[in-house]
Image (tube, rainbow, N blue to C red; front, side, top):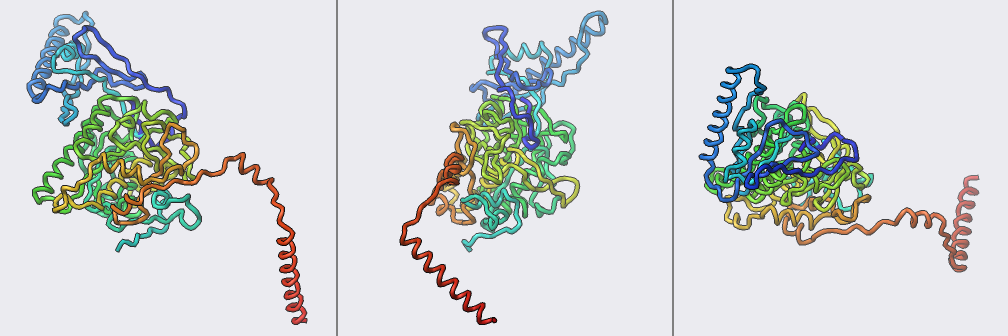
Length: 506
């Protein structure tokens, strides 16, 4: 499941990924793979059956099997150099996964160990690991000279000369909310974050705690930057799952999702114990994608069930987003990309798995290389952080989790439904009929969440078709005789006044 930063624009037509299943014995757990993905050799993600509560014994068992097979292979190699024994070193257990809806582990195993795992009664299925890569008072505050994407989500109608760079927002938008940007990392020292960006976790083994690519920093800026961000008071946590070249493995991405979900749960506990004052919730953004992965979709859904509000990019293949992960994760908000001219971006994926659209073409945001660096790039990668920021923005308008009103805590499912319900319907052109034509809206700068929700959505009147516009160019309206007479009298009076005025000068 090769993941793309969903920023750099790929070729438009991509084959729909499909699953293949390998089964040797009837009782063996199936091994899933995606025909469209570039697999990581001998690397697997193992998912437990629902009955498994404590996985520690299984982890010990698989390591012992791995060690035994490694030792036997070494002995065999010593005894005879003529035998075709692999020289590859297998690393064994890599990650363990402990989410409420997903328990399992990943690792690098030889064929003998894999076969033993398949026949263990704890194992539900195994998925081949694969590469991933980056895809691309109540009076509102007004940010002049803002990026056009921010302006668009704060206005109902198409942007005009007077509104195209004006962002209307609540001054405290994002206050008390943590956002986990699961990507290439974040330039946490960038001035636009004002010290609100911190390093969360580096998942790829041996990689540096820095963004060597820029993609993650760009997404973080759109989420929470002072100038470039939707939620200007939110805190960003960098979760690095992709290396500086923009690629990584599915197993690392799943581990990054788990880190974000567990960090959110810890923050909730801290808030309830009075150790994290003013905390209002957490959101996450994943602007990466590739072939369909059951394991990643399960991880994202489990994270949402744990209370983490999640935005994911739809993908840049101009194809059905249901064939890609995490775009197909049902509980997340799957985001397509729109343009300044209110069109579906030509590269944006579509289909019933899309939930909403947000600006994604020529988006200006923070970058790497210095504390002031910026860059303009495109993709559904740029659309998704608008929504992650908007989720954080909306959460910040709720009561804090350490307040007496914390019982009114809004769930990810409810906020997702509200976000879609208040969107601008029918705003975009070139949206297929099986795709929700809803453009994100932030409430126009209001800080009253209840009022925003009660006002509901807005449906754009259908624009005239090209044929209708063409007809109107040749349509002639014949005025009545009285209208002609009135116009003639007015013209006569006007001409008389002009003649008198000019004559006076003479």
